[in-house]
Length: 329
Image (cartoon, helix red, strand yellow):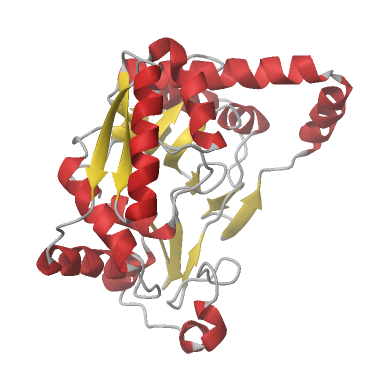
């Protein structure tokens, strides 16, 4: 079951199948989602172990970049994992002999009728929880029998637990080899992978790039420079500081020949703000407090952002408010 607007890719083999939700590319084999799920399905054919995924399968997973979840279905059970840094969350429910997965703990709790964990409620209600970014400890969720799968692991229903996939022994040897390379070789390798990823994205879908004057944004533009006719950038315009930076970013983009839009966050109605806040609350299992400025940005972005387009950002993850708003149940 998935949201009607979700991007879902499916491949079925002789005794197994692979489902990918989200966006992913293989910059080394120059594959997008359809090719990726087909390759993963072929690799499953050589996987004899019933409770674990093979090294050859995991070696290919290491090559995939993006923001995604993958579910492997075999006769022996299911295996589930997300992208390497967990940009899109994945939760697992265990109870009454059932194993279920979802991008949202709240959705699992409602479907499986799972009660809130009183210990987690104490954490959320404590004063220190309001300091900095609000994350629960470890793999915890607000609900009993529901936990986050986490990054760099997969969940095996046959084993009933997570299996760590990074680092593995072969990565120790790869690290030694990479340490022996000079800086020029390392930069060349990273640059090639980054540019290949950029090319795969801009040639296979509509792309928007959030732009500031920071180093991350400049790195994005450098990777996308050869394809500047295939994407556009945007910046937020809210308070005076944001407005000044947005105008400078606009000038910077135009000087590079990149199309650029300024998304204004003023004039957001209280009704629109409240609807977005309710969506955020439910998607974040009611454990976060959302600033009005962040809510206004998401309202403005939802009114402007093209359907089926994807956003490229220069950081490993979005703010929690942006992440939970974009993840559809």
